[in-house]
Length: 292
Image (cartoon, rainbow, N blue to C red; front, side):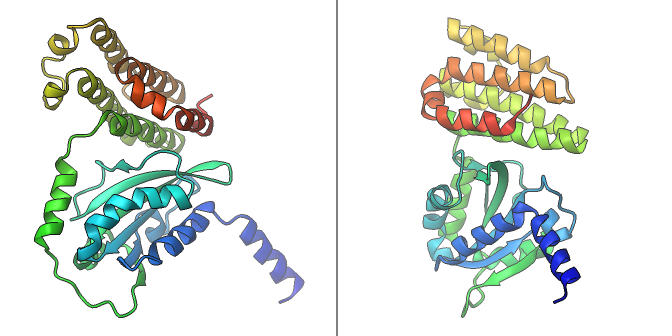
């Protein structure tokens, strides 16, 4: 290798997006598990359209016999080995592809990055790759084809989709959505920012309902004033929700900062224990989000 080639190679290495390092680390961690049969990348990295704000979006094929165990334990695994900042958020945005999706926010080299994992039963990976135009990165040695359907796995996935979120789940959802909205604003993706801002307000409403009137959480906005207006804390939360609803429909960085502050104020009123349990993580998150 001559001096010019060496200099170009060094320049390319210096400008290599950090997401590739995260992808490599995630691959090493996940493929070390005997439960994992496939690993594939989808989204912008598979399409070749990624940028330095792109999330790392992986499909993880899991043996049917190990699916429930792996889906339950993977959050602790990511937290212990990849620098996860918040508990994983069960992804309600990703389409139903026959598995369960999770969003992880990771701290890597003093920056915050997003890792999306879609945990799929092994027999559904080929179909998911076709639908999402993903790229297969790994197949376990000796793996043979598996049936597409498995009653116990299907029941576990259905239960995961139908289980009502806890206050902690909804608090994490608010924080993850604010992170997503910030990326949309930077990229100029106004309509996606609009959609996710509405979802953030709905998550804050769900948090207030779940904490203060859990038996009516399924009602959404219906009878909200009647149910929450019975207590001083509930009435204060209604004022917070009115403030969130009055925010600009297409958020700016300044309005997102106000929205997040209001949502966290509501969370401290309605679910102080959930906020206290995550306070250090929230403080770190606010540092990395940096909405100044």
